[in-house]
Length: 128
Image: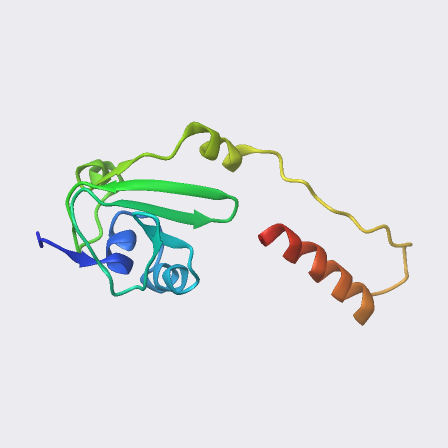
């Protein structure tokens, strides 16, 4: 075990992300904070630090117990990271998904370019 390890590698190792590239993209997109500060993928993490990860509408919070570079099994994750995510945030995972259905008459074909831009703007408003 190392004293410190890159944040992108650590988040992948504790299964916060499925791939290292996803972890790296999240760091570059300011979706990962260590002790309240946005970080780059190469920043080392040390035991005791608090990591916040924004994934969609949910803000996951972890405390580093022990850094690891190797991906660990799901049952071993508590040895390396303590999940501090409040239940209110976890409830957002199971919230009913609001679907938006734009009424289109049957047989009118594919959406026009204007329709597509409207739909994209609607979806983008929920990502923020």
